[in-house]
Length: 496
Image 1 (cartoon, rainbow, N blue to C red):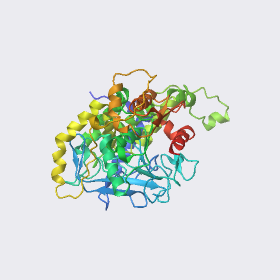
Image 2 (image 1 turned 90 degrees about the horizontal axis):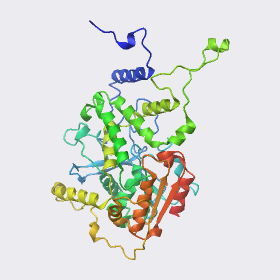
Image 3 (image 1 turned 90 degrees about the vertical axis):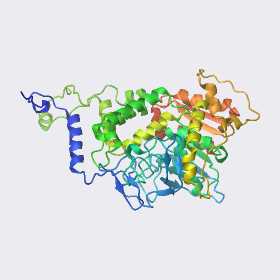
Image 4 (image 1 turned 180 degrees about the horizontal axis):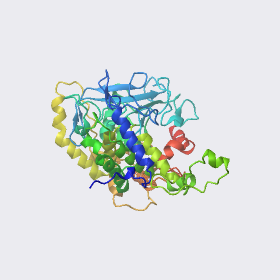
């Protein structure tokens, strides 16, 4: 006895959200020849093709020097957990001019899914993800008449830098999940090679937001003598368990999508359903309840009156509840997931988010990574035989760093069991001026994490070198993208 398909039953309810997902899948299937998420060009790079139009981030389907610049390292890069990249590319863009002694460079680190396109420029007039914070003149947080700004797509990303969608050197097919596990330190090591290639010895500032706030610290930890100052906005020195759990849930959505195919989907259907679900979860963590209450409250979407209803002045009593997006907050999440699910590579999301989870600046965690690297050093040393230049970024051991004239600092924040370990892990930053910005409404990187970072830095060196700003805006984690007045003002004042 055969059963009828539910949506073919005359009494079955409609599910436009399910229909939309099925329609997207059908469209992808019929456009398979155009939708080859991978395109190999004359630079031997793999890119993500945008099939849905312009997105919030520029997509480099046909890269040219006018769109962004590309740095290629031909020396092997040893990764923290034993992997080796024989060579790699880093996509980057710049604004402003490097001064004669190359002392005015600011390295801007990005959030998880951002590209190098932080600001529009003649080669790409699309507004960047930090468009209103960078520009000529004192009205901007970072004045490009004074500073030379460099922003990269991170190692592991999919907007021009080497990542899981890039060709494996052995067979030219996408790495997929053959790509090695990476850390924030690995991403920063790749950036330091770019900085070396530009002839820059010391950064005026290592600055970043969200994940970039982690990297701003990591860059100074690896090369403390090469960073004049640090700006960490809505970042953390140690990924908390709640954030780890949220990112795990996102990866679970992706990896449960049959189209993910254990990471080897590049010649078929992308895991668009899992990607949409993952983005919906992420969006919940990016904003705040107070903002959503103000914007959406419990309002539900209302179907506009038909022409007949308008003509007869029939009042619309409101739509009956639906199982698809019904409340305005639901439609918002649905929209965010829909517009993102084909904009970013799923494997990049998996690898880069895992790197965020692994970030931990406490001394025991750093010592554990050091042990992993020491066990695998021979992998790179063999490949570097004959090379004139060593590209090792290994700093001195933690125990060898001494801080003179340390001033006492008493924290008023609640004590955490890892406080002393975090202070010890941040020792290499003890002489570097730091700006930390936290937001009370941030639920992804809670405000207490920025306060912990500030307190640990103050305990480990001169407390007055650490500037801490606490913001009360309702926009949650995304405040660093929105609040040009307070975030921008704090940065501008710090860089003077």
